[in-house]
Image 1 (cartoon, rainbow, N blue to C red):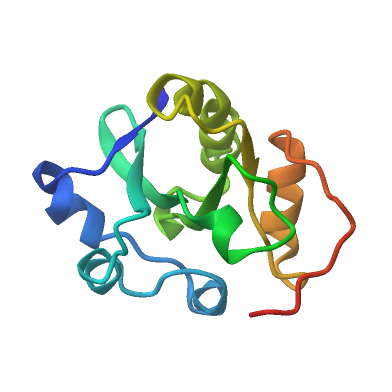
Image 2: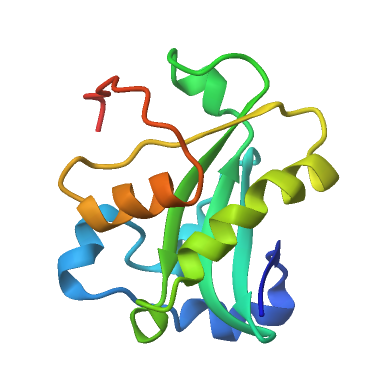
Length: 144
C-alpha cells in the first residue's frame, strides 16, 4: 500500500538512503541529506511510503507561485520528486502522485492548485505525471 506523509526526523535514516540511478541524478536531488539541511521555510518535505517503508521523497513548495510567474496564486509546487531506484517500475510514483490532491486538501487547504515543471528530456517522469492526472499546459519554462 502506498501512502504519503510529512517528513519527520523519525524516518531520517531511511530517507537519506534513497538513491536514483546515475542517469536520473541530473533531474532530481542527488543528496537528500544535504537537501534537507538547506530547506527554505516554504519547502515542505514529504515521504512516499510502501507498506510503511520509505521509498520516495518530494517537496511541496508553498512559495511556488511567488517564484514562477506561470503559477496562479494559491498554487503549491511539487519539487524534487524521486522514487528510490530499487523501487522503480512498480507504479509507486503514479500512485503517490494520485494521492497528492486529497493530501493537499487535508493538510494544506489554503492551496487550490498543484504545479510542477519537468525537464523535457525526462520522458519517464513526464509520462508518469500525465498518467497520474497532471495536465501539460504546453508552456516551456527555460529558467533551469
